[in-house]
Length: 328
Image (cartoon, rainbow, N blue to C red; front, top):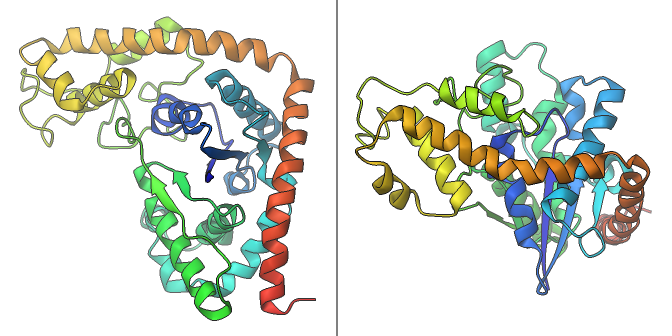
């Protein structure tokens, strides 16, 4: 049976980019021929310096979102990364099979260094991909659904696994990343050259819990261009193509079909239609989320059940790894 692993950092309010890039696709990975593990990547979130009570709330929010999206916790365990100690332990072991050069080449770390310089950057940020490798390899994941900005980390995971397997024999399965066909990289509405991010607050980021009128307003104010014609050039019309990509992701239709439908129409009409499509998509989801989030005890019960199942699987892999290394 195919095994799929998905994780998300509880670093802030869920937004349209994370929803279309990953969350919307998570329930689709569940099937009679696959086993899916979902985890809250709270250890990865520590480098963001989140207040403890906020981190707890964010983590429980994500459990509620997963359930609201249609994830069946009975068949697809949901757990917190920090509650399965094998993640941190295997990460330390795998540090011995990754190089400084490889980690220096990771795009997310390089971007931080270019923006703020190397001094003051946290070791955890530098070492983030190794913990991600441990997350994946503990569960013998066949597939890892990620956005295109995370593919480099999955490739590093494969290198680490191959390096270890070559030294000690077959231990880790080599995973492959799976990207959604549409909407995997939603951009900021006020700066369509930048990926939508909760770290950049303002009118450019659409949060899943935004009021309907707030969502409409943000799309009305979306940055476009002065060309006046839809579909001239993706390079010159980043804002327009971002809106088209969002419509494509929401409808499941190819971008080319959405573009053909909108050629010859006005920018304002496109903005309004995209805003309304987002409002319609999120309305039932927000209702289910509110109901689930009100029962914190049940959310914690879901995490406890998930921890038990994850600990069994991860523990076996960690035990095998330590045996291969001669750790007593």
